[in-house]
Structure formats: C-alpha cells, structure tokens
Image 1: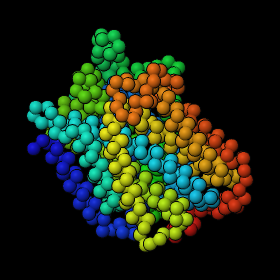
Image 2 (image 1 turned 90 degrees about the vertical axis):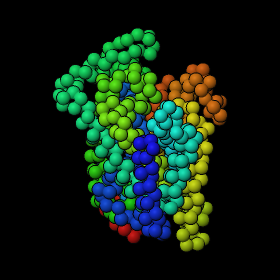
Image 3 (image 1 turned 30 degrees about the horizontal axis):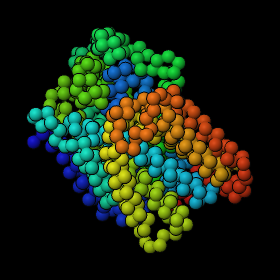
Image 4 (image 1 turned 45 degrees about the horizontal axis):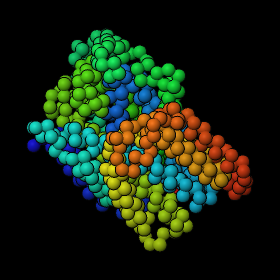
Length: 536
C-alpha cells in the first residue's frame, strides 16, 4: 500500500476513535459547544496552535520563502505578532463576558436580535471563505501526495474534497468541541514534530554550520520566469515579492489584516470558552504563542532549505511552491519522511476545517436560531445542539459544493479575505463593546456591515480576482473576471479596517441607547474580574 495513504488512514482511524470517545461526553449544550469548559491551559494552547497553523502556514509560507526569500518570511511575521493582540486585548474579556460565541459579548449590553444576526452572518462569511480555501487545498494537495507507481493520483480532486468534507462533518456532528479539540492537539503535535525534524535535517545538510547555511541563502540560483534566464539572488534581501511603493503598501495592508484579524477570527475566539477560567485562557495563549512562534521561526529553515537544497526550478517542476516542504522532506528524508510530511499536511487541513465548522455551526445555532428566531428559549431540551449538528452538516455540504465549483480559482485571496473581514467587521465592534461606554446597537450593526461589505467589494476588484486568467476559471466565478484590477492592492485591510471602525463610530453617534450605556459598568467589571462568568 502507498505509504502516504497508509499514514493518512492511520491518522483518520485515530481521530475517529477520539470522536467516538468524545460523542459519549458531548450530549449537553455546554459539552457540545465548549467541552464543558474543562480543557486545560496547555491543551487549549496546543489546540489553538493546531487551529491557527493551517495548510496555508505549513505549505504556503514555506513556499513563499522558497520562492521569495526575505519577503516570504515577512509574510509570516504578521501571523505570529497577531497573538499579542489576542493576549493583551481580547482573550480574558471574551472568556469572562461570553458563553459560547463572540456575539455573547456584543449582546451583553446591546440589543440581542440585530447584533447576533450580524455577528452570525460575519462568522459564516469568514468561516466559509477560510474553509473553502482549505478544502480546495485539500483536493489539490492530496492529488499530489497520493500517487500510484505510474504517477497517477489515487484519489481525484472531487473525491479528496468530499472525503475531507465528510470527515469534518463526522468530527463536529458526533464529537462536538471535545473531539475537535483533540483532533487539533494531535495535528499540532504532528506538525511541530515534522517541522522540527525537517529543520534539523536542513541544518545537518550544512554540517550544522549556520554560516554555511546563510551563505547558501545569499546565492540562490534559479530561472527567472519573466526573462527565462538563469539568475542568482540574495534571498536575505527584501524586494523579491513586494516591489516599489505598491508592494510596500500591500505588505503593510496584509500585516494589518493579519495582526488585527486574528483577534476577530471566530474559530479562534470560540476556543476561549473551552477553559475553566480567564487565568487558564491567558495561559493557553502563552502556550499557543510559544508553539506558533517556534513554528514560524522554523518555517525559515523549511523555505530557505527548499530554495538552497531542492532548488526553485525543481520545486516549480514538481507541483509548485506549495510542494516546497514535502519535496524538501523527500530530498533529505526519503520516501517515508515524505509520506509523513504529506500526512501532516492532510492532518493540518482536517483540524482547521473541523475548527471552522464547529465555529460556524455554533454561531448559527446559538446566536441566530436560539437567540434570534426563538428569542432565547429552546422549544425542547437539547434543541440548540441538534440545530448545531444540522448546521454543521449544511456548512459541510455547501463547502464541498463550492470547493468543487471553484477548484480552478486562485484561492490565495480567500484566506486573506477571511483575515480582512475579521479585522474589518468583527474586531471594531468587539473593542468598542468592551471599551467604549457610548457604543450602541446601531454602531455595532453599521460597523459589522461596513467592514463586511467593504472588504468583500475591495477583494473582488483587487488583483487577486481581476487578474486571474478567465480561461482557467469555471462556473459562477467567471463573471468576476475583468481585464484590469480597479483596486491596486491584493489585501484590502489598509482601507476596509479603518472603514469598519469608522462605520461603528458613525453609527454610534447617530443615536443614543441609554440601556447600553447603563450596562457598560456591569460588563466592564465582569470582563476584567470574571465576576459571574462561572455561572454563565
């Protein structure tokens, strides 16, 4: 049997056993949505890291560094620095003031129906775009990893997407947050192990001499795709990816979206409700920062190692930049290590889509169904969990169909859009709700709507979509393609994030809401002290 396929099946078997175990403990609402708030600090830290370090991080950033050197590394800095925002601003207040979702914090002193509806919409948009990107990546990468002796894929693109979709539905529908948490922990352990081992192999290739390693990085030879001539570049110098004034603005815009967007990503925020106290929430973020920091430092060894050992031309000829880390593993560790890294990539995708699915289904069930449609009262015991399970199934089916429909579309913009939407729509209203007494329901609704619409529109008219070759795009995406981009930056954060804040400010100033102002002190005390949080 193909080694990669065997390792895939082993991982799937382990996670399904965990799901069966978790299903017997996920019958109540609190157990299904928040694992009964019994996840420890180190467990949640590993789970947060597993949820955050997606295939885009493992494969994409290593590929960016292998292709663009220092500029690719700068792309990864934003992912790490982002957790300082989470640690210092949102982790403790969200854990203290909420129950299952970020909308709990908004509804604490604002009108529940409008803010929960908008928050659920924003959550579904962010989760869907992020999830589609992961599933398209799964379909493409599994085909590259799982091949027979003749080089033909063992699983079709559609088969891989459907398989991943079914697995994520099973994890969430049956195991809830507990199963999702342990899938993410296992994935994080595998990812960190594989990354550390591969980094050691890279250093070993250079005799554990950092001087020799960095000297090789300054003399990377490859064929320039524009001129078709062989060039030698210093990959420690900036400017290979982000060139000129537009490039600098694009990098700043991307960094802004990453640093601020992480604190508004729904699938990250729900993890704070799985721990027993705010202190444990802070501890888990420290664990996550240490793991994520080490990981992104090591991606430099993966990316620069691939550029110097495998070679950019060889990577381009064998699947493109996303194959940089796996090809490096094949070169340094042989077929088995290649299979292991391939299985890690697959585990990465499964863990992230499971986290996204539980986040989306929780928001739909808890925020929209129970608190908007039913006005806070369940018709029967356990209805909220049943609706969440139906929602998880629906999210999975929609994601599968969209991933198959848009399989030829450049998906890089999807992940960037998720961060941009989170930073533009979610973060402003979270911050203002926690720290601005005057803030009200009108401000929250207009702020979310402005951030959501502006980021969607700007990404649609950006180079991410409007310069895609129309001949390679199928289905509903065709009508988005035009000759030249209207908005010059690939990342809309530099414009959409200020618009989100501005919309929330203007909406607040247009009206007064005495009840929201009156409850601010109560929210402030609870957010900072945790008083009353344990009985929510």
